[in-house]
Amino acid sequence: MTFSIVAVDVEANEAGVAVQSKFLAAGAVVPWARGDVGAVATQALADVTFGPRGLDLLADGLEPQAVLDRLLDGDAQREQRQGGVVDVAGRAVSFTGAECFDWAGGLAGDGYACQGNILASADVVSAMAEAFQAAPGPLAERLVEALRAGQRAGGDRRGQEAAGLVVARPGGGYGGNHDRYIDLRVDHHERPIEELAKLLDLHHLYFERPSEDQILDVDDGVEAEIRSNLERLGKLGPGQDLWEALSDYMSWGNLEERWVGRGRVDPRVLAHLRQDR
Image (cartoon, rainbow, N blue to C red):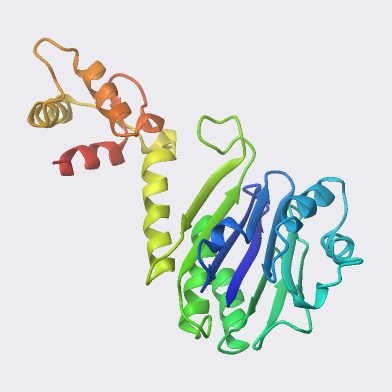
């Protein structure tokens, strides 16, 4: 009823998990990741403690296979468990218990592990692995592309309901003082993967900081456009400083991470301002 991928981007120092399932709020159960450590997926008859316990074992220096062995040791229900583990070095393993409902299995490679149960066929995990390896861009986008490929290959035999995406990166979280870079969930939806992709785009808009080469130096024409749009929206009071008004507008709209100072503007903020109603 679930398919997932755990993966890392070694160069970006990111670790993440993406999941889709015919299970309400699967994103609250399956995905676990920690910056500078790795990622864990726990599913089928999921033992949620495998997430934090597995990350602790990775942090202690155990390799992924040893982590899985430790988690499953003495577990009376191990044959109903399924999971994947990847560390920040890219070593990855997948486990499927013998009693998981067909089709059930996994596939691990350099930097990723895909696994699923109650799937249309083995093609689901193969398609996920191929899509992840072929997809360009950041880890989060590649994880979503893996889910899309798994769904196109047949996905969960019972249908769709929930999806989740977690990516951890040291200092990557809101405010820069924690590792929860991306943590998005679609708990109940007819097309949860596509809804998750929409949330990811919104996450980039609201929480990503522009790189220096993306920032525009504001000339007279752009300044006049900013002023006109703020006035149109009622966000520039009589005699109010333009840049103070723009900063207030961005904070009001949860765009404060994209503030780049007076005399400059992030192009995505400018585009958002033009389209705002």
